Image 1 (tube, protein in one colour):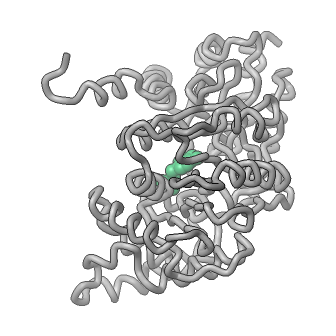
Image 2: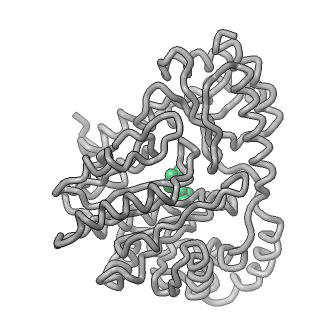
Image 3: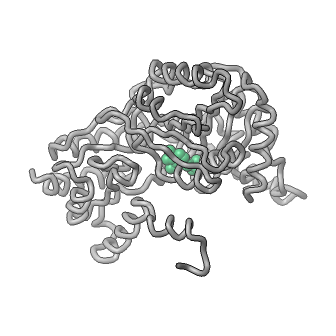
Length: 395
Ligand SMILES: Cc1ncc(COP(=O)(O)O)c(C=O)c1O
């Protein structure tokens, strides 16, 4: 029993995420053998630099920030020019005309999801999510009494299993939360499976006083390979919400700028958007950082050099193939989610650690038997890790 924090938070701290555990194990390993000798594939911190134009925008901002209110509070829903730029981009991406009034600028996708859950979840409401999934989702819901209901997707491609998801949908369901391109699986959900899911939800929603929202978490939307395009969800159902950010596409993760877009066709859409602007304020975010918002407005059509990520993706695939490890080539994001040789993800991650290679066991994403590798890592380090992967896999 702790006197200083709540039981729930203490439990969350004790069940610290596997990513965090690997991070701590990594620090220890780096102290022992030197950081240059550790191949750290455990973190999703986007390391491909921000576009060069970022420098110019910041230079111009230097003049603005020393004027009155240059960095003052701004409207809770975001700077009007940033919302307008987002609306233009999101209209094209989602293939539905949306206005600036349908977009709230948030503190990253994380802030968008948290503010949304605050606005819509009553205690006991369930959030159905395909597994594997981004583990922070659990905390984002449970802050407001929501309960995450993971539903296994089918390995090795991890596309949505619509029948299994719908089997988990019941009277307590409030949200179905999907993430494409997926962290950790790297898959992009097909237009056909998304349409099937939206249709099935529309049937359940008929006559329901409290609708079930289909929420698409898309912070990796711009990170797609081989010409892949992430299919939009907005045309599929009025009860759709898109959350995203520029953490990865503009390498802006520390600056905390994202968005929440609600479907203009949704009944009471103004109420939902007003609620999210308010919860974003009252949860203590107040408004998204002003510097980041201006960067997003000015750099809305820019993105990091995807050729760098793609070269790493191909190199990582070569490393895994050489080691005889089964995997599906990621279509988006910067993760591989290969099968753990021998079937035990924890045992294999430990074997990798003995080779100074850090990875995260699949059980940390609600899917044991697999493990996650982030290729937000220098190309040379990926190449140099090949021998260690081979030894850990017994080749
Ligand atoms: C699937 C997923 N959703 C949301 C987030 C939060 O990202 P942001 O930095 O935009 O808050 C992340 C971050 O890694 C993520 O992987």
